[in-house]
Length: 376
Image (cartoon, rainbow, N blue to C red; front, side, top):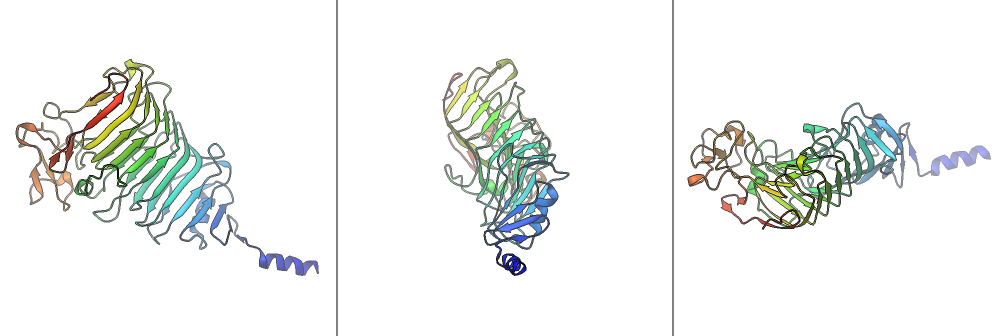
């Protein structure tokens, strides 16, 4: 009788069990045996892991020996990866690379990263989420960034999502960077509508960026991409974006920076709170507490200063600077052809992807903020 009961329990049990992954809730939730890279990969590679599932990573401290590659584009599926909480699930060494599928969401949440661990996002998902992660003295993963976002796939591919309620404690490098499609260097981003206030951007919100001292380190960087930075608290760190002075890359296309608190402790080590270098956007309702050597906002003008490799090594003067405006070539390959045009205007205005540009037009950049001599 006891043997019969045991057999029935095994048959009727809602669990699907292998050595490294336990599946529950109708085989939609998989729990890794430990937080080790191998056990997590066992869950991801399990045949039970299908579209819309959740992978739970239990409590523990585990060092990854390489970046953990999560390919959701192949097979086109959604996935949620959940740790047991900040300071409970602890990952060091390396982090996650997630390639998302167009039309599919993914989420990474609930853990602490340290050392070289970070998050790399590729693919074409427009609805991904990274939240409730504590980045503890991280030194960078892909391209030396803690979170690196870049579309991949088709030439016109782009990706967008939300990073929220994360803490960056004494980051050793730039915390976040968004870059346009690698094939076209951001041309595809500049070819889409500007869409201020829309979903075509990476949103960074309700996060804390805290540096014990000031080292002129940036929180955010952007080239050929779009971002929104709102409702964040930043201490002893600056915010910025790239222009078109990097070989093969366009300037940041769109930025929206509002309702953030910037705190600067020692002005002699902090050059500027916000460096506006290219693209179009809005900057309002921010507060800067404490001085920097150059005030809260600096603006780049490339009629008088230019640096970088060919073809960006000439001053903006109406004839020297060329760039690809179409979708057939990388901007850095601009020597001749129908899409290769002089991008600098007469008398050096407008310059390549200069502040306020929107494709062939120049918009007004709005900046209304408080503290350290508010900038109009």
